[in-house]
Structures are given as C-alpha cells and as structure tokens.
Length: 425
Image (cartoon, rainbow, N blue to C red; front, side, top):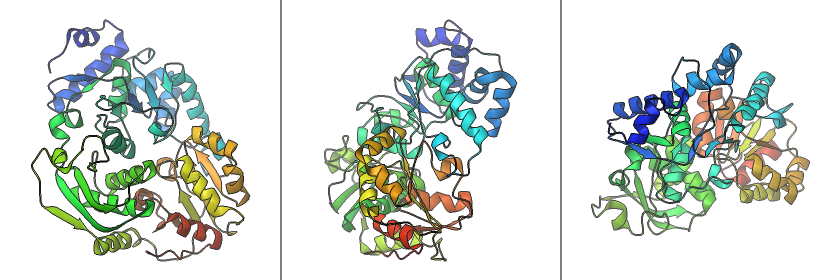
C-alpha cells in the first residue's frame, strides 16, 4: 500500500503503541483487499460495547484495554487504549436496564455493557446504541468517507445520504476510530458506485410494507450488487427507504442502491448507470405476491405469542403510528408486543405521550437492541409476527421460531387477538 508520511508515522509508533497496532491492522486489511491506499474518515460506527462471553473473559483477565486490543485491534500486546482520534458512535448492542423483567437477557451482560459504556464514553465513543444512528445525530454528508458496521445502516449511509462506506467489522472500525483511516476500496471508489441492475416497478408499491417487499425482491435478485429502481411508486420517506434497504441487505448483500430523482447520486437513470443501461427486470403483482409468500412460508401455526415492531429501529412517526393503532385496545393475554427504538427517540415518545398509550395496551418500548442482536425473545415464544422483512428473514434461524410478516395493522391485530389473520391486499 502507498502510505502518507502521517500514516507511516502512526505505523511506526509516533502516536503510541495502540495506534501503531491499529495502523498495522489496517495495512494488513488493505493489502488483503488489494487496496492501494487508505481513506481519511471522521465518522466511525462500531460495536465496542456489545457484551459477549468472550468479551467478559477478556475483561476479567485484563480489563477493557485488553478486550479492545484483542477484539478490535487483533493484538495480544498489553496496550493502553487512548481517546478515539475521530468521532465514533456505538451502534445497537445488548438489551439495557429497561429490559429487566421483560427480555430474558443475562443480568451480567447488562452490567458488563454498562461498564463498557462508561469506559468507551470517556474515550470519545458516543453511546447512541441504535442501528439507525442517522435518526439520532450521526448524519454524515454526501461524499464523506465513513467506516460503519451493520448492514441496514451501511446501505442507508451509502444510498440515501450519499456518504461512502463498506460494511466493516469490529476490528476495522476499532482501528479506524484510533487512526481516522480505513482502506480505500469498494464503495469508497466512485467507479464502484454505479448501478448494475435495473428494476422497473409496474405496480404494487404503495406503503411501508410494500417497500420492504420490494427491497426483499431486489436483494434476492442482485445479491451484493447495486439495483436501480424506477417505475410506479409513491414517493418514499425516511421510513420507507430504511425498510427497503434493510430488506435488500437481508435477502442479498446490497450496500448501495439508487432511486433516480430521489437518492442523491442518481439524478437520472442514465447517471445511475453512467450511460450503460441494462435491460429492465419487472416487478409487479406476480412478483409482489411471490415475495409475500416467501416471507410467510415459515409460519404454520396462527397462534401468535410475540409481535415485534421496529427493525431497523423505529422512527418517531412509526412509534406514533403504533400508538394510534393500539389506542384503546388491550393485548391478548398470551401475546407480548415489543417495539424496538433508539433510546433518544424513546425519550421523545415518552414526552409525546406515545409510550403511555402503548404501555396502557400492554406493549413495551425497548431501547438499544433487538431480539436478533441479543438472541432473546419472550420466554416460550413459538410464533412471532413482524412488519420487518429483515426480522422475518433472520429470526426463525436465530431463535428457531415461526414467523409471520405483514403490515403494522396486521401485527397489531395479532397482538390484540393472539391470532395471525394478515393477508396481502
């Protein structure tokens, strides 16, 4: 790799052994990727505080300095971890103290995580604790080089914001935090940001549920390439776009998509493809029905134990919509409802009265995590319902439970009746 004088100095220890270890990791990482140089970044989003048995063991042996050195710098050396060189945020993590008595999550993990938050917060990591950091203050600018983890966050960062990041891991984001560098390859390079497949929507994309199904179709079609979507659909909002991207990143590995005239790097279809236009693949009622059936082929029992909303973490508008749907209702005795939210937006929901309405119905707003990340659902759960194509895709495999996918209204009906009665309209 071609290194600047500053990068060589960091590698050689001018800023201390932890930074040197971080630079060594990034150089090895970049060489493995055949990257020619490193990018400067001032925006890192990682998962340093996420608890695990391995992390607990490392902390017990040598404290948080050792845990960071081993897990985030790939180093067995005794390192003193300094303040982060660049602005860094913590993405979603394990369940926090507000889950006590609700989620079956180990108390020792809650305590470990709380300790981690104090350690990393003092070193410049903002504990946003959400997979949607762009909803609560971490909003990079178009063209900015970032180092982000979490598939739904990465696809939103690249596509909707127009910043540039690959889907990084715990080690690369840890090293980027201490150096302000990340290998310059993949989505950081302009030539890798043009569309590869054209999907034309003939009909059937009207609302949040439809955007999730279209994203699931797109990801399954293009896998890890870059769809460009045109055609007949209502103008999407933030919620629609995060749902579309999360679904596309689940059924495939999409990290960047374009909606000409909507997303920032595609003012036109021609610009999205740099003039090299492929034949269109059509999405209409037949394809829509096939996606719906695929997402609902993991459920056989219509008895619903658990309803999950908020994946990616719910926006204030989504929380308000859930409160409106639940107002005056009461959950079925055998069914629990969790709505996953960023802690900062839970505070907004509390002040706006939405939390009170949801809790009066028997539902819970939980911050920081989700059942997939924490591998925790209500005890005895056999069947769950969700409005998230991402959770319908992942949670049956992670927790061994059945899934139903549908609209917010379908999910609230299931929470109130204890039965799945959703259907595609």
